[in-house]
Length: 258
Image (tube, rainbow, N blue to C red):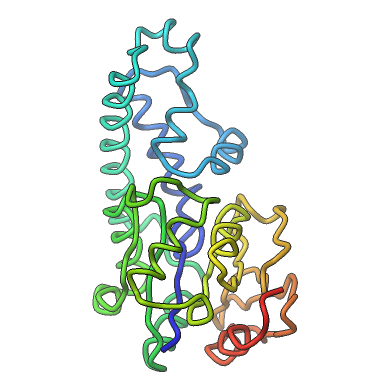
């Protein structure tokens, strides 16, 4: 049985700009930390895999000393855990508010894959409560129950390392030829490719200009009738119409990886 594995952020919904960024900034404000990331700042931060890791990037020796923050490793680990816990709470509240609708084609294609007998999964290094909240809003609570979810700090290395995808394959009992990944970033794509997986990229707000060499197919989105997909690159030779379909994904899975 083939399995469709979705990344979460930027794939299921445009969560980075509308969710994670404001959640980080609100957390910093509540903690009295003099940091407020702009859209351009965050465009760079998304290249760092993991929320705690992004927060840790501000903890330079100079910043720590100037703001009276813990300088020891254990103290910083506890600080980041507290910050990230609060950030996840804020983010989950934003999801529940409807601030992040599903990207085009997500609900449609997930339902079609389920009906066709495909397995469904999400593999993300974001916190599991955040991932499950986005998933339920993107595909509905009933279909969300059909997804295996691999998320959070369950692997030692985050994307672009392949660990999360290797874990998903192992837990699902799949070979690399039995699964297809939907990603939105170069880091995510490299993680999937290094796990031996074919990858379809749906570019998002922060990733549109990244290098997607190695992807089987690159599109603007998966497409819905009111927001059709646009093909950006088709290295595997599969050319979808305005709606990416299960037949398109089956064809990609049957082709050699570019």
